[in-house]
Amino acid sequence: MSGATLDRLDARLRDNTAVVGVIGLGYVGLPVACLIADSGLRVVGVDVKPEVAAQVNAGTSTIRGREPGLEALLREQVSAGRLRATTSYADLASADLVLISVETPVSDDHQPAYDALRRACEQLGPVLAEGALVVVESTVSPGTMERVVTPALERSTGRVAGSGFFVGHCPERVMPGRLLRNLRELSRVVGGQTPAVAACMTRFYGRYVRGDLDPTDLLTAELVKTVENAYRDVNIAFANQVALIAEHAGGDAWKVRELVNKSPGRNMLLPGAGVGGHCIPKDPWLLVSAAPDDVGAPLLQAARSLNEGMPSHVADLALRLLAEEGIDPGSAVVAVLGYAYLEDSDDSRHSPSAAAVAALEGAGCHVRIHDPYVAGHQGDLGSVLSGADCALLMVAHSQYRDLAPEWLAAHLRRPLLVDGRRVFEPEALTAAGLRHRTVGRGR
Image (cartoon, rainbow, N blue to C red; front, side, top):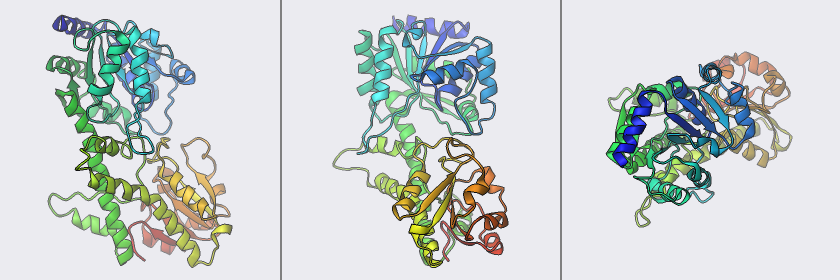
């Protein structure tokens, strides 16, 4: 029965009659839905927010920031009748394959919080077609497919995984600003509950993924995604640790990085004002949660702690700069430039700027925030800077990279600047009359 059911799905994929459901129309689900529709299949997207479904059906992207090609592709697929959105799981009853792309956060005590994932499985189960394939694209802790997803679907369907339906895990590798490009070009780890399921998934993803598709089992797919993001977190933490040491020693971590990376096999990453987004601040904790209690994961935990501390560090640099000028924090106005976690994006999830603002306000400063993409913080940059005693640059948006240091100095009440991303050459800041601090660079 299992082989026959998968053969039927394969046949429907080949002749373009398969219907694909996508649960969650956010940074992952929306571009995925567009690409699947563009490959010739009919797609039904489900989102709990009626306003999201309405915008998608109107051909309007809910994602702001620079996303090359996304809104045009969305309009094209909606107009062609290949993509529609809804808030009703009942509309997935005809789906042959369902992708789940919901948030999988961690709790305040760093444990996986799978409320949204469980709800998706519970609501999908009663309408899931016999023999359908359910693929989780959200990042999850190793063992989650076996312990959480499969049991939830078995309870809600009343059927057994492997005969009544099939499960897979193919974690995304997206980044705001490059959503379509990454989904098309990057390789994917394709985890199936059996080799036959992984092979079927590989044929499906091959419709729009140009990168390598590596079939494997569920656990390996879970491990690969959490490990790769933990790896990046640790390496960013190393760069930030070097930056803190260089600041104290009076050196320049940016020059050090340049020279270190001339040595074969070295790839020191960029230090900065903090690590944000939905993935890197969370995924290492998903991996830590799978570590044995008697061993733990001290390296991953130390990296998380160091990276979480960087926003407070850059806020402290601003406070020190104000103190050197004899400015009391209680009377100081600080302009924070950037609130998204990534340049040229509107994604403010786990924003390092939020932590920096909290630290500055905790010290008594009045804080103004500007971000060209984040709703509520858009507006005229000159007005935000006018009357400010110090600017704290948190995000390397293109708008900020294009600024002349002289323009910044002219708009500030006092020419003080902390560059949390080394957007500007320190010598150019000095020449413009700005008194400044740069992360990773000593006085």
